[in-house]
Length: 245
Length: 86
Image (cartoon, rainbow over all chains, first blue to last red; front, side, top):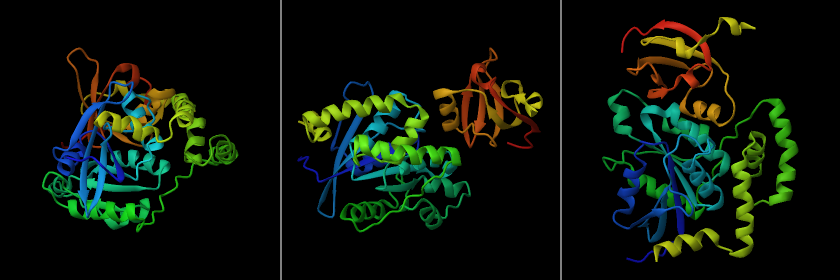
């Protein structure tokens, strides 16, 4: 059982969307669990291969949001921002899209390497819910793949989409949420300052929004991360691989 | 302001529907409520009160969420009558 991987996939989603069902289906027994460093939040990572490419998958804690500053949400947010996964897979519950899209939109503000995966399509069908996947994909500006993890439907399409994204065959154009004029003006003022301070390492517009939100926990995480960057270069890879030894 | 006319979510009775107009809460609690679906313009159904009267279960965008009176008393909106069917 070798755990060499080329690409990292982060799995995000609301609680009870079948995120872990998908995780288990893809990674099988090739899993490690533990805690995130310094937090009592379960960290699960697993490995799988598709088309001769080796992937590592991180099952992030199930959350409704990334901004309420619970330990779960901070872990998920920090991994998407600092862990820089090659793809962030957002799992949505097809029977409650309205609620689930909240998280999807938050992730789309953070990174453009996103695949949206609409799970529980079988449940939705039973309830008479029809989802226009193409339209959703067009609106969000990223690939949308319908699946039913429980019935193992759509999994190959999903893996192929992941594959094409890591190869650079998929160009995404995530929806940009526009805020009220006064907020947009402040964002425009902050973005250059943010870029000056932390470089282009992190999504400047998103950081500006968090600053306007008064999100102190992100500032702390950013400061710690800057220190860590100076000390050890592939910081995230380091402590993750140390754990899997 | 119309505020005087707005009802509090905590005063709505089980079976009643309620349309949210304003959240008079700040900080992470507001964020949390918004994330859970308590968004202005959104409709909530009061499902049932717990035996001691607090917390109360609400249905909001197809999910059941229970709120304590601390939160539900700061959610304002209009009571829009009873749900016809389940």
